[in-house]
Image (cartoon, rainbow, N blue to C red; front, top):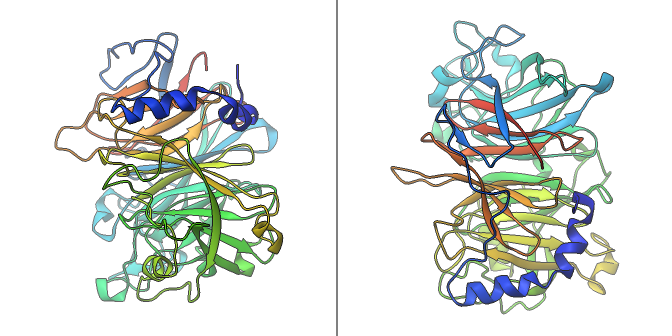
Amino acid sequence: MLNRRHFAGAALAFAGLATQSRAAASGLMATTPGYGPLQPDPAGLLDLPPGFSYRTVSQLGQKMSDGLLVPDRADGMGCFALDKGRIALVRNHELQPRHRAKGPFGESAINPAEAFDSRDGAALPGGTTTLVLDPASLTVEQEYLSLVGTIRNCAGGVTPWNSWLTCEESVDGPEDGVGQPHGWMFDVPADAGKLVKAEPLKAMGRFNREAAAVDPRTGIVYMTEDRSDSLFYRFLPDVPGSLQRGGRLQALALHNRSFRDSRNWEGQAMQPGSWHFADWIDLDNPESPADDLRTRGAAKGALVFARGEGVHWGEDELYFTCTSGGLAKQGQIMRYRPSRHEGTAAESKLPGRLQLFLESTDRAQFSFGDNLTVAPNGHLIVCEDQYDDVVDNHLRGVTPHGEVYAFGRIRVQTEPAGVCFSPDGSTMFVNLYSPTRTLAIRGPF
């Protein structure tokens, strides 16, 4: 079986990408049975293939170790190894100022000085919670609020220094009734043990953020933006691993500047499986009070994407979803392979490359991919996030061939989010967005 380390080389080598391209050209999706047919869940929550099971480790309204309550709208999440064999989940909560009743406070009060922002004397409810678990029994030994006072913490990314980069999917500011501008990234240590001071990483830009991934070799951070005319960003830190010390913000462009739109809304200009040499464009004024990073970048030649969302670092490459990309507007998955000289002057001689790895042509097979991760067998696991009145969201598997299958079906009216694996690959964790449930899934991955 493939593992995460081998996914990159295997995916490039497999002739299955050609199969996927031919299927897309004929209006079909390349599919595979995956782990087998989904089995109906007697509890009516999550259907899984034979041999797989789940348990709930946390849910909305439970009292946490700090006396606060598990908030609603659980979204992006990362899993980390801690000392003494324990693991931690750092979990986003995509709460807006109007969602205070769904936040962590209950009858308790948080000192606004401990929060990033407040309104009417009360801390904003958005932020992160952290769960510390025994990896064998999945017993939650500690659960606490780890960041508060932010808005719409959607997704994020794990770092090589064992922290979670949580991202605000909001550019609200004082004109919207809050205390200060939002749209930032925050670094939350996995082993904090308590509420951390919220320090925005302003040099990394202010925009309608979604997710982040860090190249452990270089410390470069890659970031997505959830807008229909979004860009794909990278941050070159002055000191790798010390994001608060500043750096340089850039946006992805293609070497062929005549091609500036990856969305394929008017036709399949970017073919599945095709590779394109990348350039990177410097962006000034990253704090962007006018929320115009994407328009300024596009005017300079940056490539436009259809709602960049989840991003995950593999082995020497990364994948990110574009939720509404493609002629059918059902979603795309992009793959970026950095240069061996990424972020240096020498990369112009050997640039990184971008590939359209997958484009959905069939809502029933893949629709609105959002958060994603890599399973121990090397397959991508993607969370669907449909918005219809009646949704049919799945956890979708994608093989290195670009073949799609159903790994799980959500039986309640919500989205799966925050999919990630324990460090040993034995357990997959996923959130059900609202009402919050965090599930642990085990089986023959």
